[in-house]
Length: 585
Image (cartoon, rainbow, N blue to C red; front, side, top):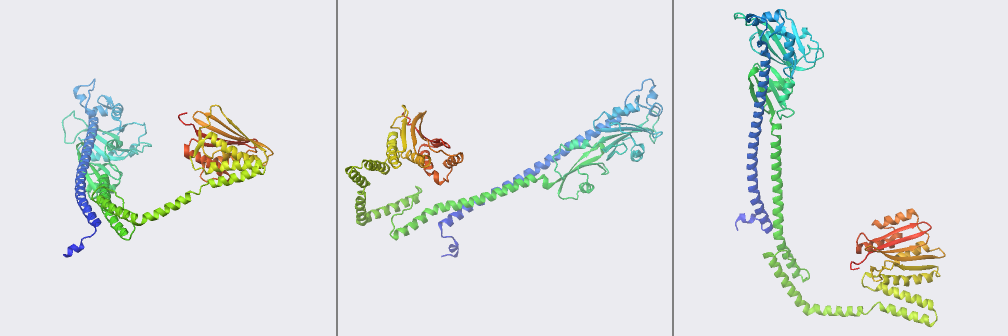
């Protein structure tokens, strides 16, 4: 035999399991890995493209916002000057220095117009070139500390290109009393163009206005950035206008592109000649992708385990009947023919099991004919002899005793024996569990007769049936006698006399039977204990009779039937039983 044949499993169970698992796992792994890779590439491209579009849109909005501030600064070059000649209208130096006007408008009024032209402007101020005088308007009417206003450094930065708009990066505005705002400043020189052009432009003054950096946060809300992602706006010299996080090291790494974990995206902002740069952590950006990929891998693992379990279960289900049949053959060989394997299917294995069972049955029948039949006959004869011993021998014996008492003129003893015999016959009669109401009351009378003789006729039984109550209505056998016995033992015993009343009435579709006594009654604590015992599984010793009757009624008729107890100490106890009335009634 080849060596590889020795390595193959010999069990059908092992062969089928291995084949099932291999056929299922190989396609599952191949398809799952291909799907994960395709899905990952798609999500990566979609997420990156979507983020690029958002950065582009934000840069466009920022450029539009800076363009708007550029237009606001150009308001100084528009307007007419009423009452002056055309040459004087163009003479900005004269207009600013002599008239303290811009566009025929007082400088303070012009600054107020500029200030309220945009909701993000916090302050506007004009510095006259001739004497350095500062005119200003502030949205919250704060005082200006002119000495702390960095006008000199700003004007120095504007000397290279005096005719262009200047935007200075975000900074605090401590030059206003009590201000703690973060702003960036926009500036433009007012150049006098009334005379001939010169190498050095004639600057009449410089307009500055501060813009709250919350403007950037307005646009920032349009991006779905994570908590550690960074977004910066820099000018052409990489001077920082705005930083989302504010950390200098993070901004430097973002500008230099030294952090490999960051996905860098940038767009131009032409008005300020700068760039909008976004640094998004790849881990956070593709967190959902990693989570989805982990979920897919986990699903692959679960499917693989399920496939292995199902393969083992199917193979075991296939091979189990064969092994069970093999074990049963061994049992039959030992001579035990009473146990046969069950037929669980109608396939080839099921038909094989049926054939084996028929063979065993025929073998069993053959043995029965030769040997077991004789044993069964002996057993039948023995059972016939046992069945002849009936409880009626006890009735006959009691009848002999009763006749002897009659012969001796002991009538009361004879009546007691007769009542006892009737009770015994009623109890031992293995008939129906339900009897007619009249039959149950008759048994109760036989029982009470013996009790009354025992206690010198101190107790009386009173039976009262309502006119609409039929005596043949069925009740549970031996349901009234335990209640009456309980009333005598715990209610009337010790009293000189007492009465037990049994009444029955119809209440809708319910037969209500009340057993009342005028005995000692029960305390509220005892009554509560008995009511609790009727509903609990653990029954106290003194409540066995009531609990037994209650549970028997509920088990036969349903949860809505049973008995209830009411009692008052010193006045007596009442037990009410509820039975259903037959529907045909």
